Length: 412
Image (cartoon, rainbow, N blue to C red):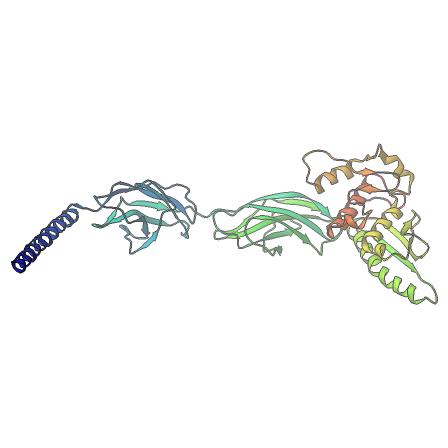
């Protein structure tokens, strides 16, 4: 009896299990077929263009309906022919708002070119495209410049400060300056190429000029449009300075003296070069090595003494002492120019304003012997060779303000 009951229960369980198995599958299959049969491709539009340049533009799309299924991919497709598809060029969104709106940035385009653009979206039913938009990239135009009036002017060389403000919509591959003795020079005249490209500030030094000569200079920049030029700027070189020297040396110098002479030779030659090229001063100086002098000193008769300290046997100190031989801190003219610690002279203060690129008037500071900035009073004041140039330019401006008794008459 127990055996029959066990067999009966097994049969019942099998019937129930088979019934459950057959009943579950059709229900699941019917639900899946229902989802697939109702999904359609999304509905969307292509957004208008913004921020159009020669090489880029911003666009996007708005998905108004997902077609009954999740959107798995969206973006922008574009090309040179109408009706672009994802088989052409595509970009993915840079941002997505909710489930509908997205923004994309097209880049690497060609200037002055028409592109056809469509937004696209993909779901399980397929790929949908938005309305087609035509994008015309901007034309390449001329670069623009800011050209600071020139103030670094010597007898045979001059420096320019230029900034390329805009590249005209295409990368500047070359920039520099060109100059001539006639107006509006081009790169077919004298040209100096700078070692950088693109926009931004740069300084160049023109060499090999003639003294007391008026020149015209223009900045130039080259992009896909061609050569762009700044406005014409004129400047006049100054008369050449005549700085000469006598290096007084012992008849039978010791090893210490020989070493000091070697250390002082380069500074006297370099300082003389700066005076000759960036001032019109005429002076003969006498250089002496005197271990008894604590640092260095000079008078307006041209006598200069350098002590044993190697820290002052350099160009900085040599120029500083040459300034004294020309009259700064050693003449009655100088004492009359310093009032309440400030230099009184229009040419110097106007130049200092240009050097410092100041929007307000400035005055050189000074005392009975020294002046600053750019007086080269300490080694720490020198950050580059431009500080030597500025020192000499200020000396030349002092000559315009009347400092001529010990440096020759000023002649424009």
